[in-house]
Length: 128
Image: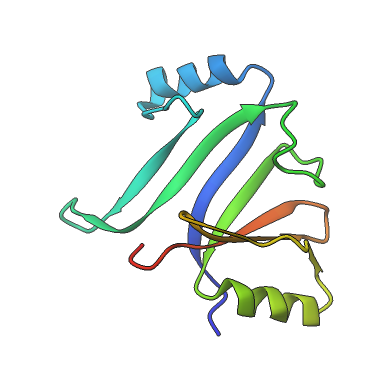
């Protein structure tokens, strides 16, 4: 079974998320949207959209999005078979959170790494 196949997103907290979002938009040209982030569409060598996106988001320091971790960041990894991977991680003794989400955006599960960082596992919907 393949485990991680790529990075689906990078999420981090900021003291002043609106100001930091504006800085990234102005200085790095990131198209920050109302939800506080951007979606980078993957492209092939000719610049044509290809098979997926990577999300990027800045949240408030008060956000509990990364709980139970106290880290100010979370990485989302793309996976091929979320349920099989979550099962394997549990069997290996990893700290896997019980909750698994299944939505129009795909399937999501979470594991806590040995240093207490919350890691998001994402199986995109078919075709992405």
